[in-house]
Length: 131
Image 1 (cartoon, rainbow, N blue to C red):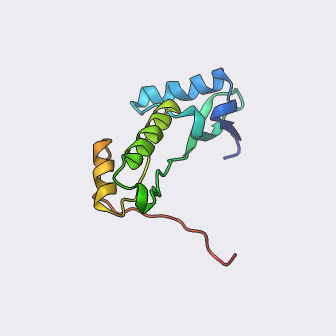
Image 2: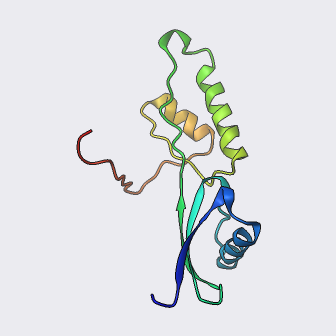
C-alpha cells in the first residue's frame, strides 16, 4: 500500500506509547496481551501516525528436550527442572509453550502443568539444505 509506512516494534525496546497503542487494539478485539519479552510487531502506519494494521511475530518457547541421566531418574530431578522452567515461563509472561512428549512420563508432566494434547495437525518449517 502506498499510503502506509512499515516499521518494527520490538517488545523489549518498544516505547510505552507504542506498546500501549498495540495492547489497546488487542483489548478491543478481545485478544490476549502479548509477551513483551518475546514479541516483535510489524506495524503499518498511515501518514498521520495511526496504526493501519500490524502482524505479530511471537516466539513460542519449546520446553524440550528434557534429559535426566539414568542414574538420576526417579529422584525428582525431572520434576524440579520442569517446575523451575514453568516458573521462568510465568515470570517472562510467555503466552504459552510447546513440548514434544516422547514418553509416558513426559506426557504426565505436561498434563500435570495444564498442557493440552493437540488434536490438530501441527506443522513445522525446518531448515533446508546442507550445512
